[in-house]
Image (cartoon, rainbow, N blue to C red):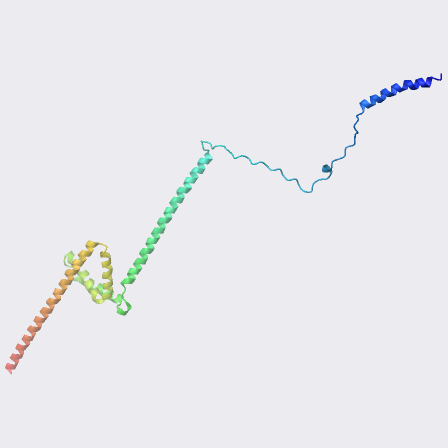
Length: 238
């Protein structure tokens, strides 16, 4: 009876050893700890995180379609219309500028020409009464040749008016002559004919003056002789 506790202890030792071995097999050897939250989750950053840089996209290698779209055709037609309108607008503006330039040139030429015909101030030549005298002389020549042929009716009043102009308005007529001669120089044939007519007229005028002087001298001699004869008769009658 004294050996029963010892037998119970011996029987309990294998059972305890088996239980210990089972627990060591079932329980892992590593020590498990409770997980704590990470600092990155607990502490939030003050500034926003920079956005990731995008890689540059490769250039597009798509080739244009051989058939243009209606929008492309419309854009092309609008471009042609704009170029056409711009070209014609520039041409019209150039023509207008040329026309205005010619008009201003003609105006300045006309005013300078009229100013060049005026007599100098020291000439004391008045255009208003002198022009009226010339007009009256031409009208008188027209009245005198109203029953003649058309050649005389056209030439005589003109000749009388020109002669009256040289008498009444000599400086103005000289300026007009210089202006007409400047125009005639542009046409050589007309200038040569003018010189020929002018030379013939001056020669005729010179011959007329010589003839007039000769006739005047002859008339003076005849008058002197007649006076001497009359004086002789008078002296004999006394």
